[in-house]
Length: 252
Length: 248
Ligand SMILES: Nc1ncnc2c1ncn2[C@@H]1O[C@H](COP(=O)(O)OP(=O)(O)O)[C@@H](O)[C@H]1O
Ligand SMILES: [Mg+2]
Image (cartoon, rainbow over all chains, first blue to last red):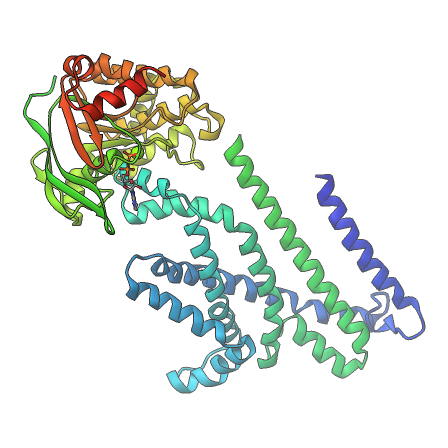
């Protein structure tokens, strides 16, 4: 418990010091000063992107975890064919830069499929696709770390493959890979900023638009940094809480 | 008591790991209700033999029949044979993320499709049989090794198998816990269960076995009643082995 507070305190102190340095001559905090009407409006405008950043990231990570698991399973199969499907997917998807994937899905995919695609879903698809390769590797490593005896015990009570996975292997694997999954969520929150290039009204896009009208990039991007920082600190605390809870579950 | 007649038939089974031959033409018949104790030096193929009977290991020659069904590598034969056999491992292999009760209920609920209430009743009744009814809500790591192994035995029994296989069930235990596990196994033997037990606990073997088997280098070297086996073993290898484990 005390450790959690001290981590938080150090980060908060650093952020405060960073903010206070803004009292010197070159800063113009008026642009987001909530006691003025204009500053308040600007702040609201910036924070208006928060919900989209969160929604985009959560939707994408949910899909990418599901896809990642689907891709991980053939990677664990004894047969060479299934394993090479897994390798192929991972290598291919991992090789495409996220920004390129976003552009390809938004501008390219509609031409290919004939369907128009909203900015939001283009972002979700691109982020989820790109992340799924990493999720697949995480799941594969997590599942491989489970002792062979667990499969034999599951076999000894006649569990089917699906039941073995759902009731025995995955619950243990997920506990082990929780920190890595948490990392991917943090990564996803940051990468969602790239979806701003196709016009998604998330945090980064909002900041960019405000910079164009207010012409105060230093202050506005500083706020943007703080927005991501706070968001990610909350996610980290959540993941650590979950880890502690699952561990307590096993001990007590 | 179960009706006599062969329930396990192992016919000329050979198993290889790459070039290495782990089983050489093993033939063994076990009747219903019979208790077979298997011993032999480390690496002699004891585990491989019972893992073959259990379908956890492939064999390249020979055949195995369990309760009339031939063991094959396809799902259908697995589905027919698996529920008839229970297996207890040296390392217990309990599910660490589930409570004792959940460990016991998983098989009945998921593979025997029992209702949860009935499965819970069943689990409690087998926990009483292995004499740890009070540990139902604990997690495996909160129990001693002896208690964990008894939970593992109860977990197998919840599947109500006809045959129980034990692979060195007390080898991973501290000496003071061995007897509590052997007592439970003795009781099981007295209830008429067909058992194949790999163990070096010769006191237990004398008490419950009605057939002793000695293996070496992947072969069954000697197979005899306990009286003959302990008083006048035929082969020199078996005499040598008994000398070592009875007088240390
Ligand atoms: N999966 C495996 N791969 C290769 N060799 C194995 C494997 N399992 C067992 N063996 C070998 O087969 C032999 C018999 O092993 P095992 O049946 O475990 O013996 P025991 O149980 O009598 O100690 C040993 O020499 C062992 O090294
Ligand atoms: Mg062995």
